[in-house]
Length: 138
Image 1 (tube, rainbow, N blue to C red):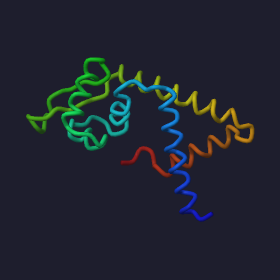
Image 2: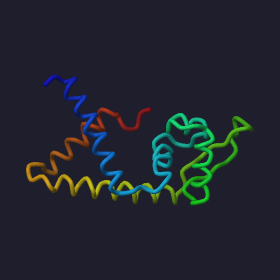
Image 3: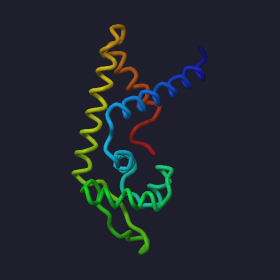
């Protein structure tokens, strides 16, 4: 198999794994948004909508629910009086850690079901994805 074919398989299987875990765990609404805020830092509604590929009104409604739950804060944008900046709160970070821990537990259980897969295999997969994504860079 060529590098390109292997890379394509990696994308397909990583996406399938994420979808399978999400389906099984029934994530709370807003998890995608708090994950985006964790990855990108504080953002405006329009930026969040663009990243989540939804409309601005849809994102505004979702953010309002997250503010009510205490997972995010929303403050006026100091650079644009018409806009706001949405920031992940401590409670939101706690919820994201909880969700990620559940994801990890589910993936670990899936790996454990395959006796030919080892902890080292899992570590290699993480290292490859981390390297490809170059965590910590935009």
